[in-house]
Length: 59
Image (cartoon, rainbow, N blue to C red; front, side, top):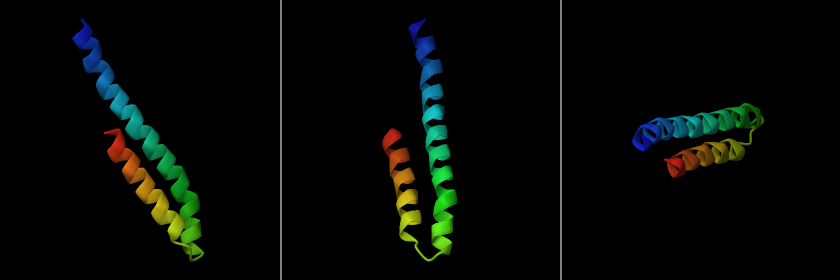
C-alpha cells in the first residue's frame, strides 16, 4: 500500500518541480529578451544559468 502511494507521489513531485522551474524561467525570459535587444546580454545569461542549475539540483 505504501509503495503504491510512493510510486504515485514521486513522479508527481518531479513533474511539479519541472513545471514550476519551466514557468519561472519562461516568465523571466520575456523581460530578459527585451534586455538583450537593448544590448545587455548579462541578465539573459544569468536567467538561463539559474534555471539550468536549479533544474539539475532538483533532480
